[in-house]
Image (tube, rainbow, N blue to C red; front, side, top):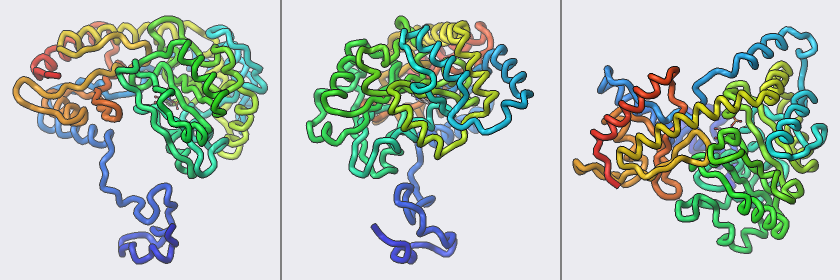
Length: 422
Ligand SMILES: Cc1ncc(COP(=O)(O)O)c(C=O)c1O
């Protein structure tokens, strides 16, 4: 590794004096000088081009990955009341018992999983920071985290920050978007400390059958790694009852599950979630968290507890996104896409077209995305990690059923005009 003085000559007059001090994990002396343009920035640029070229054409935005509604009124009312209570003013540290108890009731009611709220549950400020902190509990330099790809990358990024490595498990259509755990070489298993899985999966929308979770539990015990299950989309399950990894016999011996208030409760910006499962892992997580933040505002925790106790909230949100998903599947099928209702999540993951009847050809999903945005004002998110796919999200803004239907009609019209081929 180079030292600050060795790097000093690489800085330019416009660089701050500390340019050579940046840590290697974020690019070292080259930090801030990268020329790579990230996927979401490319989408933003294509949207800007499209709007400049066609100011009167409405963008049909299926790229947004955030709930389009505010949290339920009842939850906002609890928040409004709790905000005025003096006892909620201070540091929350690792969280108030009221939220942990509500989380325990939620886990029991929905999944039949019995957890001790005092020792097996800890809140987090949204589940994203939990994925940033869990590697700190396990990863030493050279250790491996196995992650499914495409997927939510945060645990992998932090694994690398700690000097660990990420072993990528591709989610392929031919394996029904489940990772092929039998293909992992023995020397990788020997160095693996964590496996991160996510069902209902983002972005593929697949749910995991119980046998897959059983296999994961057996492998974790045999190969001696821990399992982190990302349950962010669990209340948006469409193909049956939502299934927790912790329902699997033996799962409580091998791992934890992270839940989020964001998707299933329309509470994205509120930043609340919880990690639950094996007591020792929850306690390690709570220790790292205690050294990283001082807890979510207690009023927010109490409002989130009220939300967890009201099953009608996720039922309504599930029904809305299920309805929108059914309409989208029907519309895309009429336009030549091969797709079916996903098992869950508000994402539809479809094979990307290879070109158009008019002779356009797309080498990657990213090209198809740019073309659809710039030529037809249709925004999707490309995934080229394991095959070429487009992700359509049903979180578009359309407050009434009539607006939803009008949006679908317009989508059908424009996709028809695009003349896509596969
Ligand atoms: C698969 C998945 N996991 C976790 C998260 C993090 O959610 P939050 O931090 O809002 O709980 C997201 C958010 O986009 C996600 O898509």
